[in-house]
Length: 341
Image (cartoon, rainbow, N blue to C red):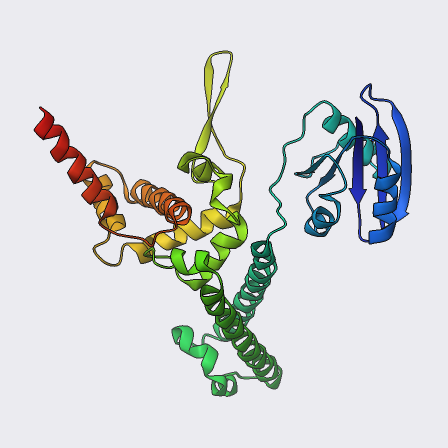
């Protein structure tokens, strides 16, 4: 078995190959090109495992290499101390792969993986849009002109209330940029809504209270398949909705947030308010936690976990959300237990 460490960049890639004893048997830099990469991997004879770090080239490399090696590992970028260059990085990856010390990051040759590009683009757009809105409001706050909430963004005539020509010019450009970004935001929303018709997974998740087209697209883009998670607790951890105990020498040293995907945490937590707007199982869960003495934050966290668990169950079973399903099942179980006694 050969162990290949790959340090990949947009211009060049550096390969280091080790044998099972940790001896470097090959190393080479190649221009980042499909043919060059495949030729090098093919030149490594026998069984081989290959590892590289998660990055902008990750999915492209995964599709390219998944059938070329016996095992392909995409891992989280690691922090390095001391000297660092491409050869050292690739050699360290090969060595960690050899001793089984790398934790794999999920990748798949799946059409749903393409949603990640769309979701990432929408998130970048919203970040820029919010920045431009804040800049516009700041112009008016600097001269004590009150801003009428969100209405200001569709009121370009307000620019003429500013005292100087320079401020008026900057405000006009910001109004134009915001109008363009809003048009692009609507374009993303149309694509998200179109995906609900194209992908049954997205349509099904939208039956859950609090999960609209944007959140459903985000969930599917990140998770890709629910069967990555054997149970809801693994999803809680990956969604950073839970913390793990820190313990050493029999002593507790607090809790540490789980390693996972921050977008899922944002999605499930932001879905809480929408899920509780009407008399849903999520609202009843919130009321139940509050009645038991939990504060509002703790109760909302419990609802976020319930939403995550529901997403996993709905997706795995292939059945639309049924608000009464769990309660009916529990009532039937209680009735059966009572009759048996």
